[in-house]
Image 1 (cartoon, rainbow, N blue to C red):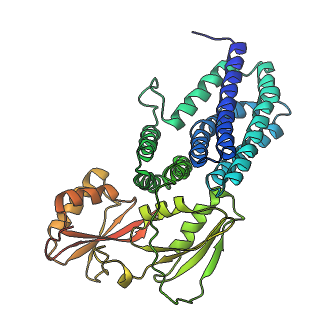
Image 2: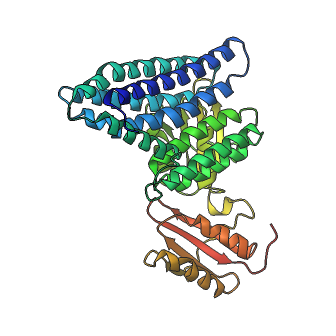
Image 3: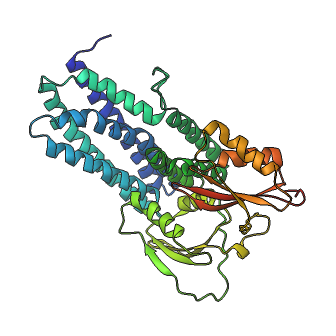
Length: 412
């Protein structure tokens, strides 16, 4: 059914109204929890997830549809730039909300988000959309359809799309995040966070847009799992007074913090560390470290709020890695198998053939252009207890790991 320009405009107004209602209702629920002195964390989680999975996808779709069209209208360029800047502020505010440590701080941040979003939507309704309606070169019906398509792609909920245009990665991620929330509600919050963090490691290089969505959801999951203590692995030696440099990320935009923290970790020499200083509890970051650097780092909480968090993050030396982690030194005689030059369909065959030819205690260095985690699961299925797996370099463009054959089969 074909709709008119005015009907398309009304549909945009209605969607804005629904989003406003969704945000206001969740802020009201948080306000009620705080003033009734009951657990406020679930309300924060609900608001964070709604903002991350409903509001932000809509905002990104707007930028690629109606905002792009508005740039062609006279005198709207500055308005569009302002609206995009407000989207960035909103994204940062959501990250800050997820990291708040007290009920009063969470409510204050949520109310600021509500005020910003209401003002933002009002400018769209009163300035941007009427100008687009008056422009004879703008087809609001097409823009509405395009905006819905882009939003659904980001959310992974576009059942009527042609199969060739469906963003399958976004769709699978959407299902994973929903399953993780159900897992957290069922009392398995720690496991839910671990799974989402693993998804983040797979997306951070190839799909930074989805990685950002995953990080936001991880913050929400940590809130849902608030009653479940997270066991941090503290391996700071007693009496250790070695000075570490400090990495204070409080002045950075939330979206920039994790990249700076991981880049600083990557630059560490084995056995050294730094002290991270943050303005909220970095639990989501810890899950991401566990997913990407299992048994390769230490995490020591030095100060835990309510305004400042300090954590010592260090890269462990090879001889300090826990027993059973199968982290071996590379033998200079190990063969290097660089599969980047091979078609994807041939890589696993070559890798398994190389492993089968190894003598006990032998190994080879695999070089790949992506994280070979799926291969690790295949090794676990076929050679459980008969191999070692040692990451030597973990992206973002090159992955190197040593795969070894054990002398005798070990029982996990």
